Length: 241
Ligand SMILES: Nc1ncnc2c1ncn2[C@@H]1O[C@H](COP(=O)(O)OP(=O)(O)OP(=O)(O)O)[C@@H](O)[C@H]1O
Image (tube, rainbow, N blue to C red):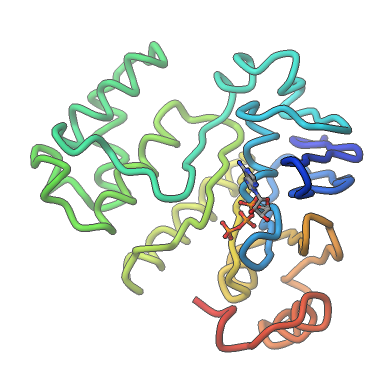
């Protein structure tokens, strides 16, 4: 079954067409990567699918709900980590995640926080003010917040930014494990190597249009890179993390 289905989904901002006629199907259990250069429409796509913005054309179904007609149902069912969001600076990770757990009316919030802090290796800073955390630690706290309610579908805009190489490996394994349990991930990235290593299904976008789809497991990273450059253009050095 499809976790996400879109038909001709489009969004204009005045004269700018941010997304144009996106028709896409993402299977349950897929680790989907929307790959494209800056300004290609990735964030807009996530905002439309999560009910944060209304499309100017087309439609979508996300875990069985229409994000325009049922944004609160979508919000309950999914997790999301937008690009560049931090925990509030004057809260500790434990306080922030407790707040997330209470907003979502979760049981065993303390247990969930402990599990995710262990998994993403930030137990040591659970009670430190967020303002004193490194960028990578803040990113991991926000990732925990997106997964805390164990949703069937999680959206993450640029999942590995700010993480050192060791932590990137740790997060990749957490993401793969999450999908291995039948859940779906929708990532956006402008890095070909992130898509090549992690994803089971990649959609390439340019200037708001889906220009190609592929299964990166069927090609090497260099092949995906050549494929991406052939579709989009650009410099190989700029599209690797
Ligand atoms: N609120 C807005 N008002 C006007 N134009 C916008 C708005 N949001 C996005 N755009 C434009 O829509 C296009 C797509 O933007 P979007 O942020 O979706 O791209 P992106 O692929 O996520 O880029 P990046 O990789 O830089 O985050 C860009 O040309 C952008 O300038």
